[in-house]
Image (cartoon, rainbow, N blue to C red):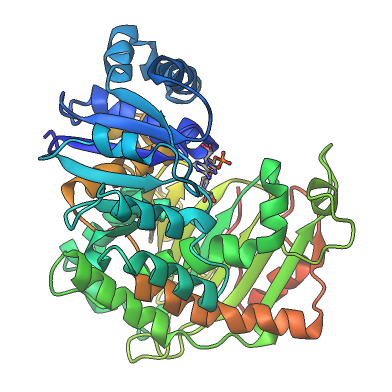
Length: 478
Ligand code: NAD
């Protein structure tokens, strides 16, 4: 179903994110027939380009990043025809009147701020001064949304000067993933899970976001940030919220976000013994973290594992283990809800611990499976084995739909539709920082030194111990 006609202005239209995710994602929506013929994409940046120059750059980006679909040259030309470009200086006056003149009335106006957050305030202000944005316009902002509570509040305040909360779309692309939405369908669309979704039946929950890559070209930014700010405060917290929240009264933006906010506010402070930071060493032909960020004395973490609790009735006593890191053994994003053991086994000689585990995989092979125990087939007697009850749907959608651009394109279409359900609200982001800040401040106050770990490992030994101490273990990173 096509969305309404729109003018989408991408500030930072020549940047890395626009090239890798936003433009290829929009092209795919165009191919799917969701972008109406009257829609326009207006790239805005400082580079001296004209429409044709921008189209040439966009073509190269799409050929590089849109996968096989970019081979449809006719459609690509038609898509590029929807692109415009203007040189606009976010901090100066140049280009703003031209942008104002280019915008059309009677279409959805959306502004994607794919630029440094330092420019959010400038852009929001000028959009208003020049009469480019109005009460119906939408503004999309990227992570990082602040580096602590104070800066997030300041960012929220600078946006709030010109935009209502209902116009602000804070992107966390994890929320745009097919599986994340399917998690909500599975949780709230079935009678099976809700009765078990609590401390009576759930032993613990573990969330892993493991990457094999290092910090890449983002060394300077990353070293000022670290895994806690870059991953835990946003992506892992959002996943935790979706697993732990109470059922919203309906699937609408504020009902969902109210419930997520309650989870974040109920998160207990993390004890310093329940958190492990790590930094990768050189290995497998790749440099160490310190070499990657060109800072031989840095104590920034490229890995975090922690244990926390949610102080409410549903989750009393259930530990939530979170871990994320770079240069690990595999690339996995997974949430596992590990159910309790049966107190007693009626099967003689069956000493293995059988557990039901609901695992929600965001990558690779997006999908959900439920580990159940059955009889090993054959005449060998009553032997039990664990098998996955597979709810994978990736095959049905085709492999090319299972990556990050898929999330971006869905979220951008949600912006045009005016649906904020999968975007973070300002108070959620602030509450997440309020929980994260004391952890980071504590490291600083103690001058905490991260543990080293081998490239290609599951992380530092201490992270394994964090679980072992509790008689539990992390799921394997494959
Ligand atoms: P980038 O440095 O590649 O691009 C920045 C863009 O902003 C360029 O188009 C540049 O011309 C424009 N710009 C800079 N100063 C400007 C000014 N004064 N006026 C007008 N335009 C100006 O950055 P990026 O990697 O595309 O990231 C953009 C934002 O998205 C950042 O906030 C980043 O943290 C965030 N982000 C990026 C990624 C990614 O994969 N690249 C992922 C998540 C979040």
